[in-house]
Length: 336
Image (tube, rainbow, N blue to C red; front, side, top):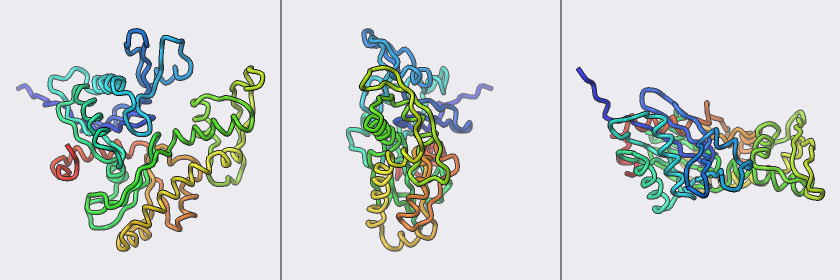
C-alpha cells in the first residue's frame, strides 16, 4: 500500500537575523542566518544562510551579501522569495504536494507587509500560508497556557523587532512592537567604538562584542575582549581592548527603550490581567533577550519577576509548530 504524504506542515520563524524552520513530527530541522549573497550583474543567488553570512562585509563589487529582512519586515521582496524557496526545498526535499506553512510576523505590521509575506511564501511553493503574531507564537513555544482567562506577558526580542504583548484567552489584549532589538544593539556598539576610539568596526565584530562582553546591568567582574577594525585617522588596521563596563555605556540607551515600552504596555493593561502578570511574572523570549543583565534591568525597573524562557531562541519556531498542530483551534485567531 502506498501512503501519500499530502505535503508537510512547516512552521517558519522568519527572523531578521535567523530563519528557524519546524516540521511537524520532526521538530526544528533548520536554523540558518537570514543572509543571501546575490550576483548583482546576473541576479543569481550564490549562497544562502551560514555560507552567505561569512561573506557579509567581505564581498567584491559584483557580489552583494544582504539581509532581505529589516526590522522584522521584508525590505527586499525578490531576495526574500528566493531565500524562502531555498529553505523550503532544503527542508522538504523534492515534494509531490506543496507544504502548508505558518509564518510569524511582528504584532504591529501593516496589511501591505502581511501580504508581502504571504505572497513571498506562496511564490516559494507553499500550498497555504497562515500568519501568526510573534508574541503569541513565543508564548506557546515557552509553554504558557494561553487558552485560560488569565494574563500572560511576553517580551520577544529578536534581531529586528521587540514584540511585547499581554495574552489572555488565546488572543492579544494589549501589544506593541518597536524596532529596537539585536540589530539596534549592534548599531549602538558600532557608534560607541567609532566615537570613543575613532575606529570603524563591522556588524559581525559588533555582534561578537555584544555576545561575549555586552551587558546592560553592572557585572560583578569586568570582562574584556580584543577586537580589530580600521583606524579612522590613519586608515590602517588597529587592535583595541574593550571592557564590559564600556558595553554597559553603549547598550543602556537601547535597553531602556525596551524597558519603557514594557512599562507603557503595563499601563494599558486591564487591572485584572495586570494582577495576573505581577503574580506570574514576565516571560522573555528571542535571541535578543540573552544580552547579559537585560532580565535584571527589566525586573529592577518594573518590580515584577522576569523569567527567560527555556531555549528562548527557538521559542517562536516551536510555538509556530505547535500552532500548526492545532490549526482548527487557531483558525479563528490566525489570519489566513
